[in-house]
Length: 288
Ligand code: B12
Ligand code: SF4
Ligand code: SF4
Image (tube, rainbow, N blue to C red; front, side):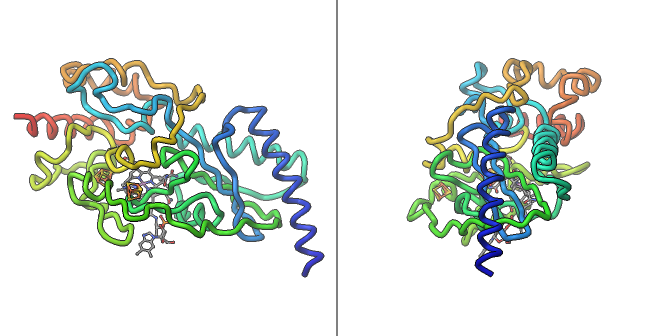
């Protein structure tokens, strides 16, 4: 058993070295991003920051009343960007270690991403439902590479640094944050503005959206740990100029054709043109 563990630990050192090399080469998961392992048949858990501009409410971007978009959606679609990085990492591992099997995941499969990340020692799940690290708050994606490589694993993150804080609960305008870190998805602005398809937003939510048109960052913006979020230098996540510059009027008069062209590679395409129009109407009627 001990022999086996030593063997796994040795591979782990080798792998850590390779990954650090990969990070340096590609600049993709930069120094702030971390990689941890859980279980012996491994799932490599990675986190990747997405904040180019740490404070990114519409107020900071020029037009006080411009519709708000979640920070993660300013640049290219993270599903594609991170999947590419994970595939690159897998190729490097294969080159250096041999014919291993593996597959990368980011927000697109039934992988318990937050829970695995916590179990691999990356951080704790906060009352706002997000994985948080003391080094960089919570503005990052979680990515997972599942492989058949046998390695020594990290310990789970044992602490919870939310303490007595309840800022996120108090700030959530729709009361979507329940006890015990449970988020009521059916009350979350992020759900309504991104995931809800072909339906009107319930009237009961009127006057609660605080101008959020796509996603919602409120429970993360108020989190004290996000003062440790640092802007990153990832070209794929550089904001699309229109995201920073369109006024409410321009958003409202955008044609489907221009929407498709401008947001071809953006996470906004998930809500579709119709969804964005519906969201705009909803926040517009909130104002009047
Ligand atoms: C469904 C989903 C949503 C739903 C529901 C969110 C929710 N918090 O439940 C909606 C659409 C509302 C949503 C919104 C957002 N999401 Co989302 N979402 C997901 C998704 C696809 C699945 C989550 C899920 O339900 N998993 C199933 C549960 C059972 O597994 P789990 O998450 O690992 O949960 C375990 C633990 O958390 C724990 N646990 C959870 N609840 C409880 C309760 C109790 C009592 C106990 C004891 C334990 C416990 O046990 C669970 C099982 O092991 C994940 C991607 C993924 N595949 O994980 C992204 C993910 C969680 N979302 C993410 C993001 C960024 C967001 C938004 C911030 C986007 C935005 N800005 O608008 C918001 C934040 C809303 C919020 N406050 O949570 C990131 C979070 C990154 C991070 N730092 O943690 C993820 C991980 C995607 C990614 N790969 O980066 N999301
Ligand atoms: S994302 Fe917004 S609506 Fe959803 S739980 Fe957080 S503050 Fe509430
Ligand atoms: S705002 Fe406070 S309670 Fe909420 S997740 Fe952050 S530290 Fe935890």
